[in-house]
Amino acid sequence: MSWAVYWEDEGIPNPSYNLTRAFVYVIHYRTCLIVGDKDKIESYGPKYFNKLMFKLAKIHFPDWIGFDRERCSYNPELANRILRIQKVAEWRLNKMFDIEI
Image 1 (tube, helix red, strand yellow):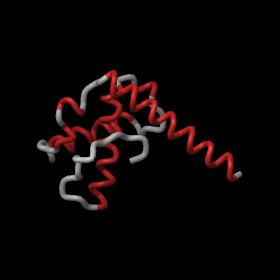
Image 2: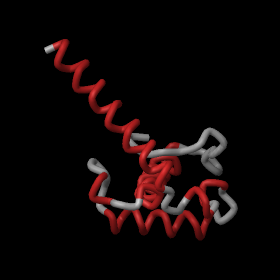
Image 3: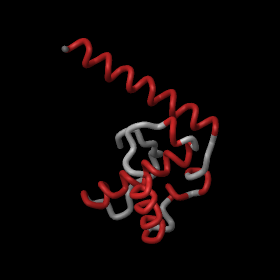
């Protein structure tokens, strides 16, 4: 999911390739909501488009567990953890490419 955060119990409703691709934007936007400070997160698509996909998904899949309030709201403890995990993952990826080049 490319730097986005999702829970194991969040299966994609009616999975198909196109729907899965659309949900990438939904989950990216939701990660921004959880982290709160969007300036701390890099490599995310245009904010307006992601927000639009988020709103459309909420209309079409209102009962999806990923839209629960606690999963779409700023959470400082979770935000800190997400940012630390992303920082370590980026460091590992850079280290892997540095070794092979």
